[in-house]
Length: 129
Image (tube, rainbow, N blue to C red):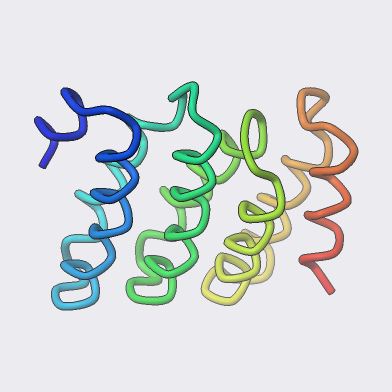
């Protein structure tokens, strides 16, 4: 799958990213490997790829809460350079599985990051409600 993601156009990458949730649903222990794959795609110039990553991160966190720490790192990166609303929705899932103190630290890091724009910060604040 990594080879397909490295050598394909954006349309194929998006289909592959969407398909990553099914193996994780069947075998939650694959979540960590899936996060590694997603992390390699974060700086892709296609906003839709980053939107797709943000969207499925919430689902993967629901399936396997044990990956919430690594998922929070990916979400922080996505907040810096992608679709903020989908990242905020995934943050809601992250907040459900992390201890309250850890979740608020992630939220605080995003809210205090000078590279995150005000619209993204608003999305984070709304996700806390």
